Image (tube, rainbow, N blue to C red):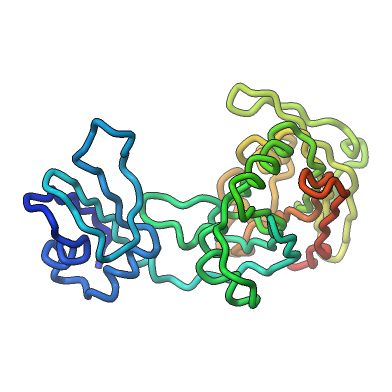
Length: 289
């Protein structure tokens, strides 16, 4: 079934969301419609515009609708029902937790769903998988969909605010690892890369480079001082060393590795809740042809 969206204006009050969807989409089973709701693909625009109500996701199948409401369904089976590689729990700190996000998992949901975004995935599957009691989950910071590695989610609004402030005020030390083709020049190690991104200043530093002649690849450790979209990918491509597997900024082809070889490997900060220093570190990426 090709992706489609449907927008339904409610003409009669006291109908449930699932009953309206079932009538409007008879080709989709009730079970799949309920999953679409749970996975964040159904939205409601309330008829009462005098309040602060705005279009938002609804997940309860038996949500009662009112005349004048509008129901929006964004249905794409490839998004809703494709398998998701699981994130791995690195540390549960109570008020927040740190995970190893796989390549392909979103940081944030879209109108087509949010179950494959890190915070919602943790809430739906990750906590239970790791035998942790159910809690609310909130996004603290972002990683590109194609980037794997360390990412943090919080479990209270207060923790979200405190931790997000650390990232926004650049109080978190972040290091990444990336593979590039060829031998990375020694003269570029510890040299600041300062090309602006989206008309905003951006700063990246290659801290070290290890070249393997057998693979004809260099493993770079990179520190970023700013957090612009695709910053490392753009900066390395700009100086002639796009990351292996980067189809957006590099010269990837069918013989290339399927995943972007970029990993968020290291986080260091002073916890605003406990006031203790926290360090999270992943093992180095493996060499691959």
